[in-house]
Amino acid sequence: MLIDQSYFIGEINIPGLTSEDVSGNLDYFISKYETEYLRLALGYPLWKALSDSMDPLTARFERLLYGYEFENCHGNMDYWTGLINTPDEIQEGALRKTTPIANYIYYNWSCDNITFTTTIGEVKGKAENSTSASVVQKQSRAYNEMSALTDKMLEFVKANAADYPEFNNCHTNPFGRTNIFNL
Image (cartoon, rainbow, N blue to C red; front, side, top):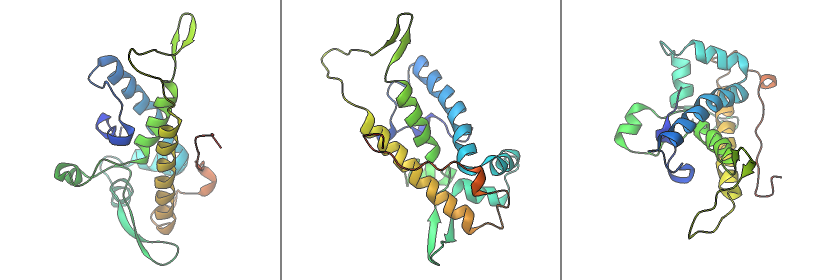
């Protein structure tokens, strides 16, 4: 796995990670949805090449994972932040851990945790001294940030097509944007 629970902070915070149940559930979502995201975003051929090149990591996949400057389609210099943060960036604390993968996982985790499956069907928890609020705005924000980061990644891959010959738009699934009305 490329990411771990430490990516779920700030706007995509998952409360209760010190609980074994919550922690185990999130690990399940990471293992399931990280692969799903990468296959949808990169397409199977490029995802397979990345998976097969993890040890040792080749330079082209190092740039995809950790970010790199590139010339965009308008001829301007741009920067792809990477699928994960470099160990140096994390140690320096210069930035928060950011990845479209975590946003995709958070979106799916929050959709799944709106209700809970019991022997009598789906139920919604009721907390004492609180009022239920809609999670749709946070879901939309996480999904849209994931989509924007994915667009930047695909722009990077297309600008460096010679480094990523396995990439083909026909193999990817565009994520688009969403809003609180699910439109």
